[in-house]
Each structure stands twice: as structure tokens, then as C-alpha cells.
Length: 414
Image 1 (cartoon, helix red, strand yellow):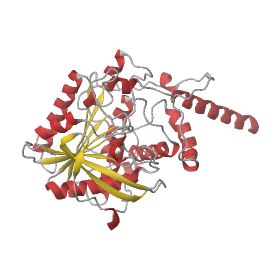
Image 2: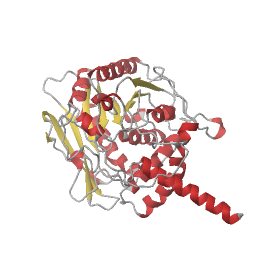
Image 3: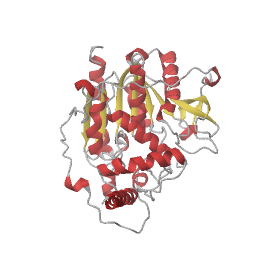
Image 4: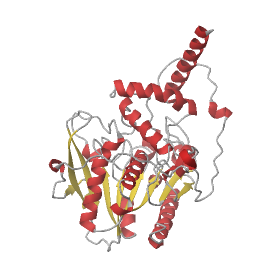
């Protein structure tokens, strides 16, 4: 009986792993008969505006999720990795400049790494009362000029950060977007925050998209645990479709993640075979079906390869978030109302999030802290600010409404 039990467990484990790869696009010919838990236990997600969901996991001593996470703060004391002192012209044109931030040797062994801070500084910019730091997602970099222009018109000095090995910060011989620990990003985030505060003397709103939403949430939580995000000048967080969990039924995560943990530790640069999908890229770029122009070397239509060590770091970051963070500042989350996974472009691709499961965004939103608003946008894409005109206009209207509330709120509330 013991042998039968072991083989049953192994068979179930192997079946789930193959199904995990099939979901992520592995080109296997085998299709095992698996009962999908998502069909048995559908998750009902209310669509009410400004809903503030609770994180589902309870914490010790009856604490609410979102109450506590104490993490170490990455050392940021090396005098050999200070930013260059001169802003240089940027690829976006005369109104933009970039600042290279040397970060020293890559902890993942790919030579010296840098980050790149970009600022929007038109000659006719209105007087700013606050600043914003924008952080991109995976297979992404900052190119959204309309976002910078909109926030400048609202009285914000706009900065954006291309993280190490991303966009402007890519260097020859380095694996695009690869890190084995999301906490490595704290170095360039801290440096960027310092530059902005020293240049402007203003409070800073952090904005982030997708993977950047996970990265910045964890970073601000660590800042707050180490002495207060507000003490660092951070007054709020706006997340655009943050990546809070791995897509697919629950057992993909519960069974697939331990496999990924071992693979990511032993073969960090092994590629996860996801197959090819250009639907999202085709919906965005003007060379295909979209309206946006950007560098396809920095943001390819089919996306960059996903590596085991990077995905392991993502899962570890998501686990930390699920235990509950306290970012010490109000947060706004914008997301699409609908998820639709597609590999080839069709008209429906313009009206949904093709990348993340929006139910998971809703499910974990309460784990940021005690003051989180979440707004679903009808017809929005994964990047809500790259949506078609009508949902994009709604997204900006929701953002502006929340920013007015943030500006008027007493410091004890904000």
C-alpha cells in the first residue's frame, strides 16, 4: 500500500507539472486528462468601484493582512556607484534627459550593471508641487510620453526609471530583465528617490506597471519597515495592473512553484518554454494593429525569454506580498475588467488584459496596507494607459480624481 500511495502522489505531481507547462505554452504533444480546479471552485469577484478587498490569509495574533512585513534593506553605501553628475539627452527628444546610475558588479554575475533615470523637463513646464517616479514592467521600458505630459499638467515633476538590464539600461552580454532577487532593485530605486528629492525637494508619488507594481510594493514596504516610507518622502503608490500572483488554477502554483524553486536555484538561467505569443505586442505597436511607437529591441512584440531564476524571484516576491505588506501610504490600483488569454491578435485583444488574471489583482489588493482603492476599467488593456481612447480617458480620470483626494487629505490620512 505504501508503494501505491507513493506512485499515486508522483503521478498526480507529474500530471500537474505537464499541465502547468501546457498552460504556459510548452509545445508538448501530450494532453493529460486533468480536472481544472478553476472550473470546480470559480472565484466570484465583485466589480464595485473603489472596492477595498481584504487579503485572504490571516496573520499571527489576529492581525489583518497588510499589517506587517519586516524585511532587510539592501545595503546602499558604496561610494563607487554614485550616479553620474550630468544629465544627457534622451531618445525621447529635447524635453527628456537621462541620468546613468552605475550599480557596480551584478550580483548575478553578468558584469557591471547600470540603471537609467529619465526626467521630463520641458521649458514651459508648469510649477510643480510634487514629483512622480514611474517604474515599468517586464519586457518594458519608459516610453509613455503622454503619461509624463499628463502628470506634468497636474503639477508633477515626472521621472521614470529603467531598471538594470531593462530598456536604456541593457548592456551587451546581459540577460534582459534578469535578476535572481527582486530586492536587488532596491539599490537603483533608493538612488533614484534620492536624486529626485535632492533635485526637487518635493514629496514623491510612485507609479508602477505590472512586474514593476510587485517590485515597488515590496520596496516601499521595506522602506516603511526601516523607518517610514513617509519619512523618505513617499506619499502614495499608483499601480497599473500589478503582478500579484501567478496565472492559472491554484495547483499550478502549489505544485509548480516547488519545482520552479529547485530549477531556479540550480539552473537560474534556464529558459522556461512558454511558446510564442504576439497578441499583446500586436495590439500596441503601430507597425501592426496599435497606435504606439516604441523600440522593439527594448520591448519586442513576443516578449523576452523568461528564465527560471527570475520567475523564482517573482514567486518569492509574491509570497511575501501574500503574507501582508504595510507600505505606509495610500495606494490606487487600476486594472482591466476582463482577462482574455490569446496567442494571436484579434479585435478582442484591444478590450482586455491579455497578460494577467485581473481576478488575482483584485484578490490580493488588500495586502498592500490599510488604504487601498481598486478601480476596474471597462475595455482596458494590460497597461491601462495604453488602452484605446475611451478606457484610457477613464483611467486618467480615475487617476486625477484620486490624486486630488491625495493632495487634499490630511497627512494622517495620506
